Amino acid sequence: MPPVSGRLALRGPTLSFVADPFQAGDQASMRYESDGLVLVENGKITAAGDYASLKPQLGRLKPVHYPDALILPGFIDTHVHYPQTQMIGGYGAQLIDWLNKYTFVTEQQFADSEHASAVAGIFLQECLRAGTTTAAVYCTVHPESVNALFHAATRRGMRMIAGKVLMDRNAPAALLDTAQSGYDQSEALIAKWHGKGRLSYAVTPRFAPTSSPAQLEAAAALWKKHPGTYMQTHLAETLQENEWVKSLFPERAGYLDVYAHYSLIGPRAVFGHALHLQEEEWRHLAASGSAVAHCPTSNSFLGSGLFDFTRARQPQAPAQAIRTGLATDVGGGTTLSMLRTMGEAYKIGQFGHYSLSAPKAFYLATRGAAHSLYLEDKIGSIAPGMEADLLVLDMKSTPIIDFRMNYCESLEDALFVQMTMADDRATRAVYVAGKLAYSRG
Ligand code: GUN
Ligand code: ZN
Image 1 (cartoon, rainbow, N blue to C red):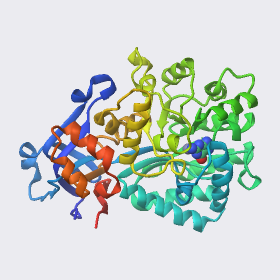
Image 2 (cartoon, rainbow, N blue to C red):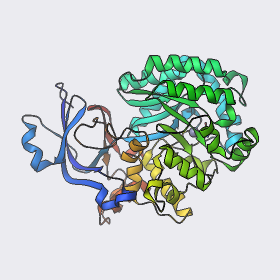
Image 3 (cartoon, rainbow, N blue to C red):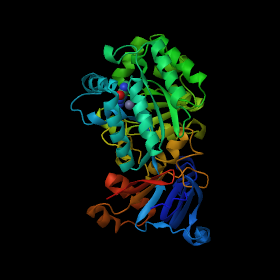
Image 4 (cartoon, protein in one colour):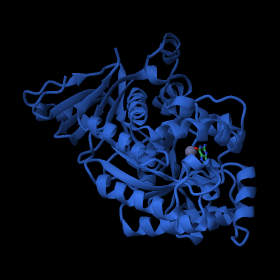
């Protein structure tokens, strides 16, 4: 158990990224210690490196030792809907039908703050069990749903980004706000939560089809008025949605141009999916410093399409690479496990003849995700000054993984086996801001 003094030391193999492997290459971007030590004081990492050299800094502090594990930065989920935790695995529909048949029915229950609080608690507990310590979260249209999530995050000390969904058209009446009420409610939530402890607010227009031009304008005004807040929405998830957007905004050049026209792109804008884009839209995403959240389990579950890794992350000119994070998109996605999500990202890449390497996948779930959220100075790495959100991964979490690990010849092999075969059972322990927040068994 961590000592009360606020000091903590973890010993074991450690892995973190010091650069973007899509640019620098896999080997050059990884910092691996086969016997590492991480020192933490008052929630922040003060030193990290190999055990032998750092041992003198321990003084009388006894490290918690995890010899058969891998100590990683906590995973970061860049796009997830907590109210949909109760509707994962809704059968037989593609996006628009799925929204009408399952999502918009479920989300009406979040007018009840007790229900919202119960689900928020389960959601965050499941995030921790999966090794996820930060997420960019969609709540529902109800302000109570945001209060529930932020209260639950505060209790656990987790760094969370979240916001009230804005919708003023094309959804059931019980889920609609107006341009004005959505603005006012969001602004009250910003005043209450943004910048409090480890919480950040995200202005959250669900997607262009459910917001009127007036609401998109109001969302942009609010986002601009409160520097440091995020803007999250969905972009080009399905071809049917693209057609719908074209019919609703015929004067715009494309889907991204709708958001660009209303000033909803730029640093701290996070676009979920980004599957069906034109080259000029990719360029615009890159040039504006916007980020995309790749949601592989959702994209295959809803039959939405294939993410273009090569275009997003390895264009001819590095300056055209897009900030990208991995995401679960529960409940379109089928798991809160970032390991499962990495495994599915690999399979999606394969369909496009792109074989996502394990270091790149782990990067996209840690430092790369932090980079996409402009948080790489706070989370996503194991380095002095970083917040001590740490995941201890059991590398032998099931009998078959234990057996398979005997035949791994490199760190990359071992990581690839984990992302292909492991899940939340591999989460041995999770530390949030230097405090033990989850321990298996
Ligand atoms: N597009 C608009 N809303 C949603 C949602 O809740 N989930 C997904 N996957 N796509 C959306
Ligand atoms: Zn989504």
